[in-house]
Structure formats: C-alpha cells, structure tokens
Image (cartoon, rainbow, N blue to C red; front, side, top):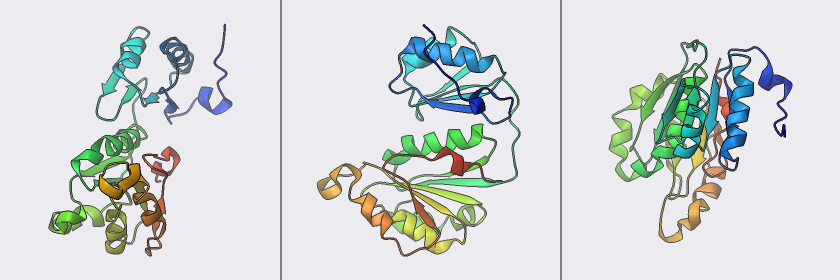
Length: 209
C-alpha cells in the first residue's frame, strides 16, 4: 500500500534538501520515502535516526552517510552550494553535543558554514570569553544548554546577531528534565534571543541568507 503522500515542496526540483523525522516511522516506510525523494535527485536528511534506519536506507542507496552523534542520515544526491554565512553552534557542556550536532549537520546540509564551539558554559565563563572571535564572526548563533540555560543570555549580551536558544534536558537536582532551562530562556532580557522548545531545532531558521 502506498502510504507516503509527499507534498509539492518535497518533490519539487530544488537545491534545498528534504528533511523528515525517522523517529517513529517503520524502516520500510522510511525506505519508501527515500526512494520517492530520490526520483527528483534531492538531497535527503533523515533526523532522529538510529542505526537500523541507516542500514535500511543503505539497502536502497549507497549514498547514505550516518552521523551517529547527531542521529542523522544524509543522502547526498547533488552538490551542496555553500554560502559565505556562518552559523555558530555553541554548547554549555559536552552532554549537550548530541543536540548541537543535530543542528550543525542540518545547517551544513543546507549549505551553511558551521563553527562549532563546545563545552564553554557559564560554570567556566573564561572558556567562552577566550573564544569571542568565534562568536563575533557568526551571522546566527545556536546556543544549546541544559541546567538553568543561562549560556544563551550571556552569548546574546556579547553579540549583535540573532541567537537561537535551545534548552536541553541535561542536568540534575531541580533541572526537571529541562523544564528549568525552558522558562529561564523565556525570561532572558536580551532582545536578540529566540527560544526553541526543549531539544528542538527549527530547521527553517538555519537557512540564513
């Protein structure tokens, strides 16, 4: 049975890769989706994908590459046109890296240059301040942090570019699975900060032109 109904934008001829979440889809459905998207020679981005998804996609194309930390499968069918814009992906700690890598790989697949700056949280603020050159040259900054989520506010106070705050569930004690970082991000006094839901990345915002 043909269960996959692709939208017009998903089957259109475009250099923008097609993205879908593989988290709750059976592997057979994912393989069918990939085959349909490949008919138009699109680059394909499967997010929240485990190794079983990657192995399933390999059965229909050898062009698949698996980024384990990001849980992303990329099927590259055409060259990626890279812009001169830079997206800085910043994390408070190493435990935030999986969420950050999801953003970074997505941004790179969309043709953006990515500058990774990991483990520079406010618990050791000197780590961030010694890397301000990385922050200043970015066009957009994605700041991933758990605990109380303070890093995005600090970064927003240092730069004059848009900051996307991504609170994560990393933490302990009164972290409440990321709920402590969520309202703190909302209450930030820095006007350039935009907040996402816990662990969520809004892909369309990564297409900085």
